[in-house]
Image 1 (cartoon, rainbow, N blue to C red):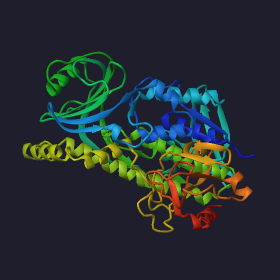
Image 2: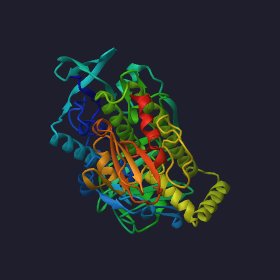
Image 3: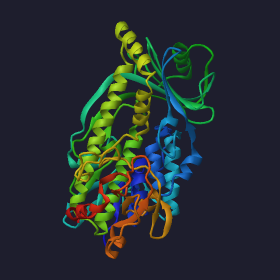
Image 4: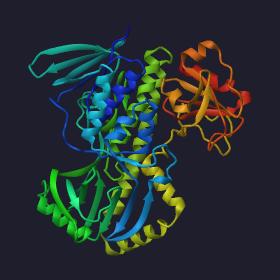
Length: 495
């Protein structure tokens, strides 16, 4: 029997990773040096792609009950709307942003783990570790000074921007800290702010962003370049709101007033041997777009199915090399997009501001651009094209390409009618034949790493083709159904 995996850090990324591993039958421990969960709201949105992955694991409903739906975003110059981005345009079972404070997200994840018999072990700090051929020896220290040496199969560093795991590995956290200072306020806000819309307002004297986080509560973020880096008072927040939104608003009943500077940093590799990094331990970036927590949670989903197959001896350890390759590329993309959004918003030169506003006003009338920006925000455009796990076996035509996200659809398996994501929730690949009967499989394959299904043609799924779909709902590859044996041999290199 293998040793459990050790997750260091009980934030949303570590909790997601522990939950995804446990769902696939992997023993796991979660440790955190803090005596109790944070009560701060921090990240306030879960995007549709993350909701899809939670749904795949059968646990999205508690999140939906704990949050509120955000139906769109807009960019304004003063009170003039430049771009409207309705999230209803996203092709997903969840065509909205789920507005939910991070402390509530962590509470839901903690409860889901507790229901499955996994308790977060608090005031237990990782102080040292060393790797051997069969696993990792981790030194843990309790608040009372007692020590524990634990043997774990893999060590998973989800311990944030100041990661002990990353420091111990000696990995450079390359990047920069932007010069601008920012204030943050979670307050009740009276006035005409839309309760289901994210608003980003550009003014000559700076930015103000509004995120609804509860029925009558908003997150306010604004840059205060040149001001002292200090937590704002409620009066200063009110002044900022009046300057950048205009009269008619009243901020009151704050639950969090803070300040921050934007860091853009990332490691160049997400793993060393049996030690892996995920979330802020591996990458941190501008809050523009609100992608940070979601990117980390998606790191966890990517890593979990690969670790599970390796620990279950259904795949060789070389499969784990694809984690860093795939997620580092996504980290680069998120850093780049968030950085561009931030720098565009911070333009100060008057002529450049006018040109920026004119350009966004014209582009905002393009439905194609709207759709593209919505997909980028909602993270349904993320893909693993070019990954070693996404080989192109033949021209795919107009349908899904290897590496693309695979939308859910009704299908039929040996046990009857079901849906694609319900089959993937078991941690196996799905061999999906479109427009033809259920493909035959050797019994050993059906039990081991693969399940067969068939479906009628739908958007992206082309009649006469067979799709090999990964446990995290991305397309590994596809081919004409008559040649589906080529798809099955793809897995041989990973066994």
